[in-house]
Image 1 (tube, one colour):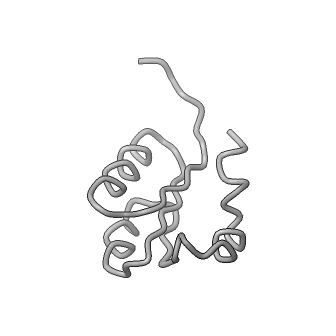
Image 2: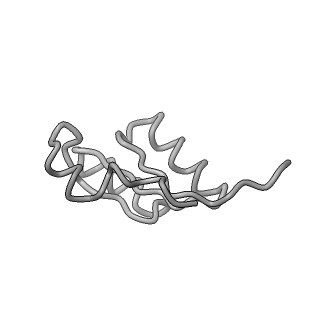
Image 3: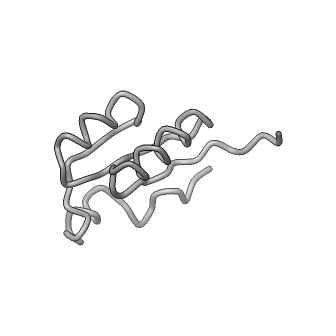
Length: 75
């Protein structure tokens, strides 16, 4: 398997699919920021995400505050 460059990845939504994606990306060596409006989902993701935040992804200001538009720009 080819090595990939480590990236910063933003996962919005930490339901079953989002948790699986976040965990897999973390195992691959990427830095994952997971966000969800549900505190229980955030708590479940916290052990394997570099950072997990309780945040409403529909709130443009909140996304702007965490720098979502810049996420993933740097390898």
